[in-house]
Image (cartoon, rainbow, N blue to C red):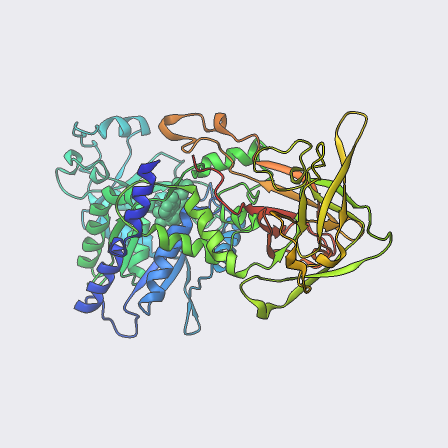
Length: 584
Ligand code: ATP
Ligand code: MG
């Protein structure tokens, strides 16, 4: 785990954002000074085939963050070229999520929301040009032959017999492909980068496919097309059409960059684009411990019913983290802290949790919650009487005012605030033992009490604790601090408490790298990732609104669940504990 710490430290160094240096140098040199366009145009290009996760948040913060910091704009572009896997539902959630994270693709009244599918006609025309200019050909090999002839790393590929097909024949075939005269897989359009491209050490340069036949309904273009452009072909062209300056992506695209550059240079030569064209830069993906991030694995968790859905608060999806109680600010803070570099590594989950605590500590109002209740009876307190107690909404911001709640004869305290036989150094409630009196404990914001006894049920379980209180010890009253006690515990009045469902969430996996080294990630599921308790909360909590966050004193940060809370009856999720309980 020391490795994670080193990586985090390295990523935290200000110099680690090498992308800033690139943007600043491009601005300084005036490379991208173009009339009417901002100096920096980035883009976030999700494929609408699933829900965004915390890894995407890194890419979103990098792209939108650079645009924001250098007076630029960041486009939201749906990379929707694969009709089979894409759906409107995903488009909607992605738009919603990027907005929620606090970013906007609007500038001066223009909405920079784009769809690669809007470029289908232009992409097609450029492909015709490539064919005519001798840079692409229709290949009619079977899929098996094509795979076989591609060669391997270290083994050059073999030219297709169709590679020398005359351009006009390829063009006619390509037009017939568009017209729907062929079945899926019968033909494919491939780039011809150079005469010996099939021997390139870079597999991505070996006559990459740029168009394929797919008789499938597209969520935006319907049945207008039955040929679809490949990602590697679509992406650089979309970037260039949108005047992107720096095209930022994750490291696995490094080997795709030569094709990116070749394609834009070739199309510039063909008169489709002007210099300067966008340039691609790569940074490392985010890997977070105790999580899996691949869409396929997340889908499995949903489909197998291991979680309740994409927005289950244990999921690393942004809709899940949002429901869990994470704030957009805490996720932005996290992304700043991890920085951007080219070094692959694992970020410890505690970095994300720490960002949440640092964001919420000054913001979250305090409240009292008893999660594992045990009855406490103040025997000398008058039955039916109720005395008001007050406590600051936030201990460091007195200007936020106070909250009030009553103390009564019957209270709820935490089960572990009482021990029949106290262990060494235990300062909370314990009964008289021999000649020694019971412990004295302050009921926070209330009175000092002394334990006088306890009740057990037939099974020997402690069901109530008895105390007497000292009338002149009320917190905040004169002389109350003459009582010196070592224990100070929270409580709620049993007469007025709000009974509420509280969901205690924890990490979904017990293994820091659940799918590392090809392991079966399902074997590392944390059986205790969710515990539901019936808790008692201070009465004011009945007014909690969905998404409102609180610090429940001594317990951690909690949010009123945005899905299951109803007016007057909130359900709470634990976002995180007050301290990292996973440190070894
Ligand atoms: P997955 O591999 O989970 O299916 P993806 O990379 O295919 O994700 P896209 O919709 O293509 O998902 O991603 C949109 C953008 O988000 C891409 O630029 C991609 O590089 C970036 N991205 C995805 N995962 C991460 C990650 N873990 N860290 C940083 N950026 C990421
Ligand atoms: Mg992808």
